[in-house]
Image (cartoon, rainbow, N blue to C red; front, side, top):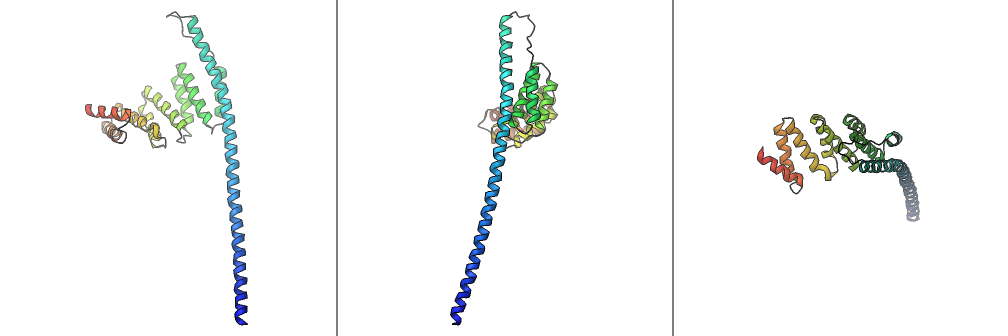
Length: 230
């Protein structure tokens, strides 16, 4: 009799434990579904946000293409060598690009807009304004490919403007990002900047790193040539 009671008691405890485990399991499942649902909703929001930004950017890009076409057409109409350079009004394009950067600051389209805006300023021979535009975009550098491409353009403008001291930290960020495609170019530019600033030891270190770690790239082969004449 006592053994039977013990067995019944053990069964009750086992049943209770199973019920507890079921409750815990259901709670965990609900938690997982809630997190997944929240992530899905956020991803959907992010996609819609980017889609709207890209749509706005595409409109500006379309206008820019039309602008360039008009510029080329005007050049053909006035082929004289001494004819003044043709400038087509870009006000509307710039307004649209500014709108993308202001309304969708965390989008890839905002970075694309900054790059295109910089190109427009460069065409107008306003390099300081092009640099200023890219500097604002670089302030929120995330390390993605489009960010690194924008940063590479910014560093190039710094170099052209004899500001290698400003180019170096930008190039370092590109090199330390996860974008492997641009690492050799960033490291080569770092070495060239260090050399132009007179930091020969640092330049040599960068060339050596480039020639060993990226020996199969054009930049690595260039570095090997530079090392021979240093």
